[in-house]
Image (cartoon, rainbow, N blue to C red; front, side, top):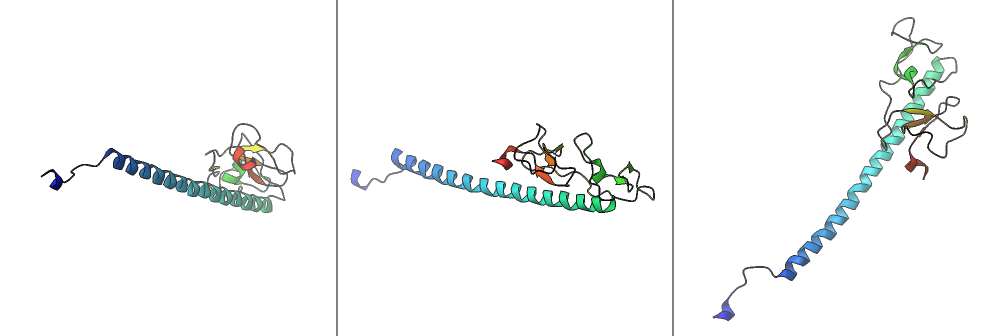
Length: 153
């Protein structure tokens, strides 16, 4: 009679084997999910830098060759109506230019929209400037760079 008896439960070895297989599969899936997130952040970063640079050039075209200036860790001349001298005011005939962007885009690596001046004007930065994150901006060339340590690794 005992030879015809069927097992109704898993052995401890079978359960452990299934748990180990599931752990390995979970590790593979999680590592694959991290790569698209980093790719998306990089794509967003490059897009935001392109938008900032192109709108800064458009600003320069309308403002006698001058780039916007940093004011309080921001570039309000890009997000407001301005006159040809770069003064900010209400939209209308006296302030016909802009806004060039609705809001300052965030750096996707640190979620900051703050703007910090580059350490040396006219030179591409090689390290973070200050502790605000966001963007480094060169008022002499209109160039933007991420102000985040991962960008300079």
